[in-house]
Image (cartoon, rainbow, N blue to C red):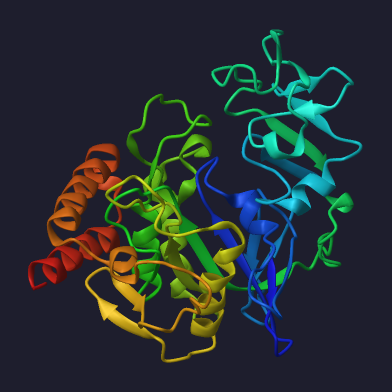
Length: 358
């Protein structure tokens, strides 16, 4: 995706999240901050290579369309996705209205009460009469041509790709993990990706709300030794010509003590993307923490929002100590001798930083 700021500067980023963690919503984001423009290149897969001459990391979208989770998608959360799938689209395991339209949970405000719905299991009911009725499978999908998207980038099919300034990893972490973390360096960034965890969703093979490891947000698709995969990423630093993008970790899903989201998400994520882009430009808007660089207070534009900054950005020492110990055990159990030494060093360094934390 590309982000253009009010000054007309365009930067490209890639993001990797586990399934149903907001990739499509981020890629098609409608900014809540005035003067910003987002253009989508893809919402799923990026193929990336370093240009041998310039050293830039360039990315292409190898797909022809979008494949998004239907429930929760509506004209408020993702208007661009809704406008993209109005024609030439395939819907799987969603509900159907009596007049042949599509329906899923999240479209209540856009569908008249009393509308007859045929659920994905074939059950008929009228909208609003029974709140327990569900029209769609939690992992139901829409599949639509990318060229129909109103904010598709004009370079979305460019075989030369676009230059990447930042790589963003993230997942659903209801507890303990700040809104955004910037890695200290490339090795630390690969460590952040290797220790990625997320609360399971309907798109995962597990049921119930568990925090599961999903390194690089690619666990279901790993096709070879994962220790070698991590080393492959680490090795990019060995070529001095490679212009390594900054690496970040985001968490839109942190909860307060009442299980309410601390961050509004959706279009307001432009505020975090703006901070990320400014960091790629070298702005001094970050403080050192035991887990990475965190935004300085007031460095993220929170105008118009009511958020608890301290809760959103806090790093509970005991939580993180338990987390890093569990992470090391899991990686060591899974990879054994194939866990790269650089990752073992990163784990030890994080333990030391947390131990020194007041």
